[in-house]
Length: 207
Image (cartoon, rainbow, N blue to C red; front, side, top):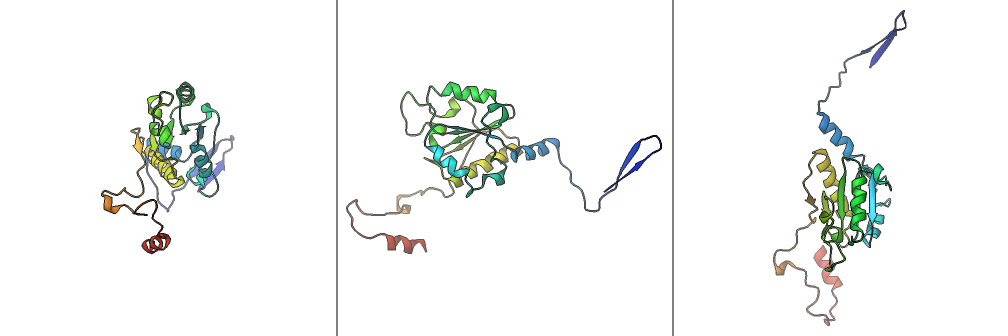
């Protein structure tokens, strides 16, 4: 609430009354981190098949807008989040580095999928074994391709890092830990030629 009164000489004074609703205190860096995490301008650098999963992620079903990261900027000078989606070859590496260098600070990088994180199943001289060989990377999202839920986990992990102003790399963990022993694995068939019907057994186990 505030009252404005005019004086005779054209001067104005503003009186701000105290509120009975309470108050909040914060630090400037915490306030800036909170504002940055919900105002990410993404630059999608899409090169391979993970691009289909990236398109699914930006569809209305997963609603990327609720995280404040839905606005794509296809100019590196207007973006602060670099999505590296797909395989990076040796010929593309200088282009990726130039795009990263053109982005304004502060900036962040998400490695989307196994190929961007570690080179994937490509074991040859033409593929970069992970974009961290070229540019700094903040969050690694494994998967070939990663599920949209895993990508959202990676985005929320990045937002948490932005708010805490932490620049150490992070990896998205699976929602379920992998089995530690062989007996915990699901045995679908005894062999490839086993003709038994498995759907009722799987449905019974899912109950």
